[in-house]
Every structure is written in C-alpha cells, then in structure tokens.
Length: 68
Image (cartoon, rainbow, N blue to C red; front, top):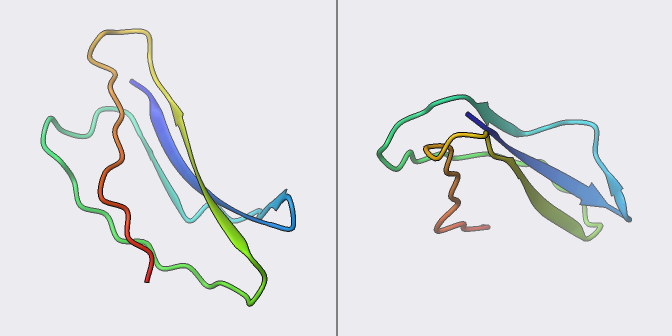
C-alpha cells in the first residue's frame, strides 16, 4: 500500500515536524482525521504528499479539508 503525509511550509522551506502520517492499508471506509497545527503569523502552506503502491487497491483520497 501507499502512504499519506501532511507537511507545513514557511518561507519556501518545509518544517521538520510532520504533523500527520499514515501508511499501509487503513480501511475501505472514509476515516475522519483531525490535526492541530501551531502556526506563526508567517504565511503557512499545508502540503499533502501521497505515495501509492503498485497494486490496484492502493488508492488515496483527501476530502473536505477545513482550516479554522
């Protein structure tokens, strides 16, 4: 299976902390995930990085992202 990571970027550089990471088979159902980020006043980009596996069942999806 594959993996999904969420990273944050400030000033064109990735932060060293990875606030979210999942790998391997999770479920056929949608899984709700909540992540708390400590952000500065500097503009921050949220980046999702997905790596799929070689099998046809290795799908990854991100849906309904909310930033409060």
